[in-house]
Image (cartoon, rainbow, N blue to C red):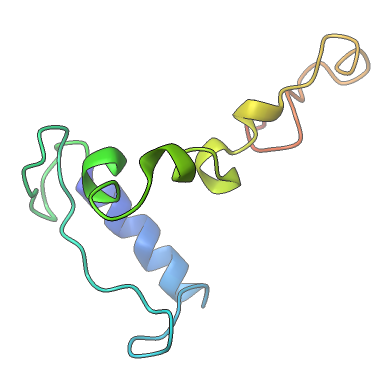
Length: 98
């Protein structure tokens, strides 16, 4: 995911009122996005950002990659029997949906 895409997602989250207000308890400090090599990337860059390098510097990457918002249902895919009547639905998360 490019830095531009991440910034667009962040803007959507803020516009939807889902983020914590700056200065509020629990608000996250600004963090520079980093590439796979750990180098900071500019907001207008098309270089993909690395959640391992960006978030993993302070958080357990193994733990956050098991979270629902990271997985979006990939770890909960339905069996073939469960998909029998709705084969286009892959699972309860966003994986495989359109």
